[in-house]
Every structure is written in C-alpha cells, then in structure tokens.
Length: 320
Length: 240
Image 1 (cartoon, rainbow over the protein chains, first blue to last red):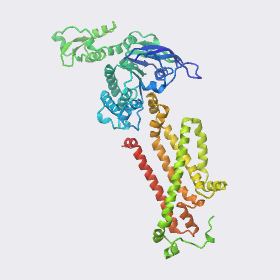
Image 2: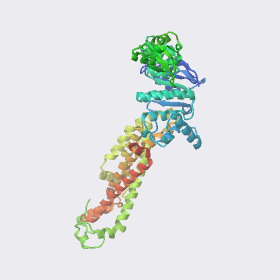
Image 3: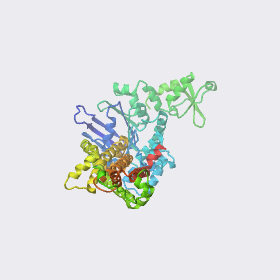
C-alpha cells in the first residue's frame, strides 16, 4: 500500500501556528518510512492523521490513491496495524485474546482466529504456552512482541508504529529492531515508523522524513542520502557530527572490494572481523588493536582478505 | 420516641427465668424465636438490602455512564448524590414520611436506602471507567473499536474491580442502615432491635438481631469478594 501525504496541514483551533504545515511525501508500498524529529515537531500527529485518530484540516492523505477523508473511522483503522510505545495491551485479556482483537472485530470464525494467533506467536518469536498468559505476567519485550503480533493479526497492508521500542531497555530494543527488520523482509508491509532517535531512524528506515518544529518537512531521503547530503543546517545538526560514522554503520564489511589474500607476515597479530559486521564495528576493532588493518573472516571461519582503515575511509567517498 | 415506661415489658417468648431477669443471652429464647422472629427478620433484611442495592446500582451506573460521556455532568451529580449521602438517616426517614404520598411503608424505606448508595456507587463506577490507562484506550481506538465497543469490551471490564468495591461498601452500608429503617417500616432486623430497646432493653433479642445484622454484612461482603475474584481472573494473576 502506498501512502501519499499531499500538502497535509493540521491546525488546532485557537492556535496561531499549525501543528503540521504543507507536508508532502510518498512512501512506496513495502517500505519503512521513519518520521523523525525533535519533540514537538508533529511526527506523532502526522502519523495519527493517517488512521484519523486526528483529523486533518488541509491537504489529503491517500492510501493506494484513496483519500482517508470521509472514510468510516472504525473500518479504516481495522485495516491499518497500530503499535504504540506503551503497547496498550488489554490487561483483562489473555495474550491470545489480545492478538485476536481485530480478527474478532472483523468476524472471523473461531478456528481461523486460533490458527492465526498460533502463526503470529511464532512469527514474533513467542512460545505457544504464552497464549493464556495475561499482559501483567509478561516482560516489557514480550509485551511489545504481543503488541506487534496484535497489529499484524488481520494482515493489514499498512502499519503505524509510534516509538514502538522507545520504552524498552537498549539491549532488548536492539534485538527487537533486528527482529522487526528480519520480519519485514518476509511480510513487506508499508510501515510508518515514528521515533525521536536518529540512530533508530537510520537503522529502521528505507526512507526518512525529518521534521522540524512547526511540522515542516526538512528533508525526505534515504538514510545514505540524508547522511551524505543533509539538506540544511538543521538536518545536519540533527543527524549529528558523527554522520560519517553513522554511514559506516550502514555498510557491511563484505560489501567492500577486499584485496586478495595477503602475505603471511601481514597476518600476525591482526584482529579478525566478521564479514557481516558493519564497517563501523570493523573500524572500532582495528583502532582497538592499535594497528591499521584486520582480517575478514566469514561465519565458517574462512579468511576473505584484509580490511584497512584506508579502505574504510575511501568507502565514504563514493556513494554505494 | 422510646416509650418503654408506658408499656408492660413483653419479652416475646415464654416467661423463663433467664428472660425475666434479662441478665445475659438466653439461648432458649433464641431457639424458641428463631423460626418465628429472627429468621423471618433476616429474610426481610436481605430483601430490603437487595432491592436498595439493585435499584441504587442501576441508577448510579446510568449516572456514571452519563458523566463518563459528558464530563460537565460529573459535578452536579456528585453534589446531588453527596447531599443525599450526608443527610442524617433518621432525619431523612422523617422528611420522607412527611410526604403525603409516602407513608410508613417499604417504599419510603427503599427511597432512603437507595439515596445512600448513589454517591458511593456513582463515584466508584465513574472512577473505574476513568482509570482505564490512556494507552489501553488509545490502542483500542487505533485498532478500530467503536466508542460503544471500547466501553463494553475494555472500559467496563477494567472498571469491574472498582465497581465491585463500590458494591461492597454500599451493601454493607445498606445492611447497617436498614436496621434503622424499622423506625418507619416494621420489618427486617431493625424490628426486633427496636422492640428489644422498647422492652427495657431486652439484651438477648438486641444482641441476637444485632449479631445477625453484622453476620449478614460480613457474609454479603465475602460473597462480593468471591464474585470479584471470579469475574476478574486477570487481576488475581497480576498480584501472583
């Protein structure tokens, strides 16, 4: 499902400045678009305009070409997955009943609902015996997985995710992010993902919409473009002074052309880096070792060549 | 109101020495009068209480739903039910008897009892509905539940512990107040209590009826606790 924001505006009565002004961008089907910006930039508002939790006051939002205006809100929302930071699981319902919320609203029969719940538990990596637990009996990470499963239950083509991993400890957050990206390669949903964390935006987004205060679009670009060519000073400072390092995080060691097998004497005492590690990690390991190069090995332990600081630096010169 | 000195003491049952001396609890009076006095009074008391709590709950529940939807109504309803709650019970009974269409009957008693349940039941129900976490409500809305579905499938189930807590207080309050109601309508456990007071404070009957009222309150409370556990399994697991 493509999502097109077309000159979207949101004004609240009694406020001089609009919360969102002239917001236009298009998210192609199957891509993750991250809305990112400082607090008060209207990113959550923009997201909530899509499922009409908030109604827009100007412009339009088109889902596969069809305007959200005038659509019956309950109907519209049942076709869009919705995940929020605090998850909002129903405390009085079991995990299975929580996940089954939208399918039940859509009138699926019991057998189909039960089968779908099983499928989703597996998809998000939860044990089958979690079915009968109540939310209070789950960890934060488990709750968020149930939240994602619940949003995916009726297989909506579009997902809205508002800081979905924001309230989770950093280690679990990184794991949930990785799992979601893996999941996304399978399910290929169009995703609008809100975060205030530029690192999360770069990691999760196929495209990133950077908003500034007042609900204006500062830049709409892929992570690479955003890091290489920030549109203005605001984006540049929001992206951070370490944007070169952030770009290194986007490229994996095996994506570089590594020089052919090296002579024996150069290999002694060199650190070994995995070929699927990001360049940023490889650079860190090389610096840590005090040298200028590391040996690249694959998962099976085979050596694939030598990676040098010089090679890493040169990778920043040309966009991939 | 107590007119003991004009009446020849009539201690109800037989004229055993224990009853004549009125020194302690006369168990033979209790067993002699169980079927004729005490048990019928208990049954009347249960009926008086049940009617008051059921009607009170129906009214308070409807008012709470109204105030939940229209915030502006909360203050007027709270003030009105609050005033009803604070009128001294004896005064309220006296005021109600003064209305010509009412009289010394059960209707008058129930009006008074119901008026005492409203504040507690209204406030607890409304608080229960309001205390549903915002994220839960937002998720429900975002998934496409209609306002009615949010009320019936999310807010009311989550408000159950608060609603039942209100019912417990209201029930115990009504059981206790209903004894005073015998002042205008001669039924329930208040009836033997009043009679005992008017009969030179006949201790056996006073204590027996008083004890039964307390026991009834405890039993009703325990029943409601069990009912709450049964309908809110999620709340129990939470604590476990």
